[in-house]
Length: 498
Image (cartoon, rainbow, N blue to C red):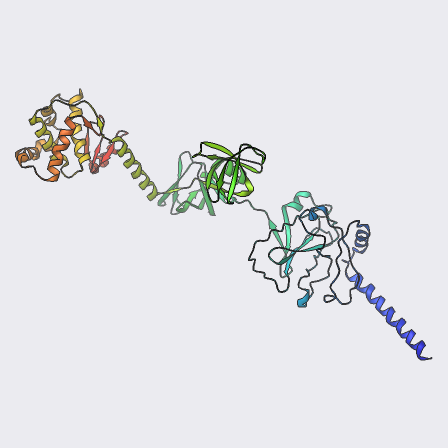
């Protein structure tokens, strides 16, 4: 056999082996038991994206595969130039890191795989936020694994392997969760969870105590008033361990309503406001960008929300006495719930309320002046100093007006002297303390003594800072006897007036 014939035979053998290897390699792409379906899918594709395989990745693969992309993926903005491939596994060499592991579809075709690999030489620490959005399309053929790669603005390649649920699966089942292919190859379920799923709302008639221990004998740490919210940290028997405001403790489970949807919680139990997220945001008269512009609000300004309607939010601009609509996408919605109040916070609040009330109710008001002699001024000034010598001017003025109010009341005598010396009324009159002050009146010269004289004189001239109140006592004594519970009670210095 001459050299030419031997060469032809050798070339024929090599070509046959090469063709056989191509056939074997092509079959390896197909999931067992699904060859015919894949072939028919490829053959029926009417719109394809060119996806050349890199020779550095698989030197033995020279053929191209084309897949039709669903409309939902086209709408996400992925260009036709992005590669679409079906690969049997993730390549191991560095040059092929941009390729993605193929999604492994089980026999029923019910799982979808989502996996991301970084492109070689590009950062993977998420330094910038990716804007890419991938929409899962359950209309993709159930027996084909489709992997889409795209480069986001983070420089990270993302892969979507999507297959729809099997024919027996319902739509709700395929939408409720997606499966993720983790680094170790295991499938992980992601389920959508409500943002406020662990929030409970007090349904107590007035309030429910938050206690240190899960017992009605536990120390009281605070109160959760009706319609206020608490974050449930864990259940413990018939109790919940909760956190609300500055209070962490136990609440009887029966006094917390749970399981409310986010929408219901926000609508019924929260106050909402927005923070402007852009440099400037137009406020419109109606829900349209063609509507009249009322004003402009600026970044980080906060405004109360009246209601949320579709993509628009109706807000109130109190300073400008108007309300208008802003686009929701340019603002951050802030949701706040009423919270518990601690025992210490409540005591401080009550004190502030009492002080505010006292300030309002002890403001000096001018009334009709009283005719008086110098002896009346002396007697009243000495009584004031004996009863309230260590008090402020306001406290001294209030004591003087108790005496004058009694003169005007039908319950008491109608003269200054008779009121002051009435039996069982002013203890200083019976103890001798008042007489001591009267004997020293001519020597009054200290600031406190002169202030007592001024308070008595101003009261006789019509200045009144306690209204028609007829009684006073030291605050400690009044508290012990329950006088602080009187609706008319007001504290001034160390005295309570009512």
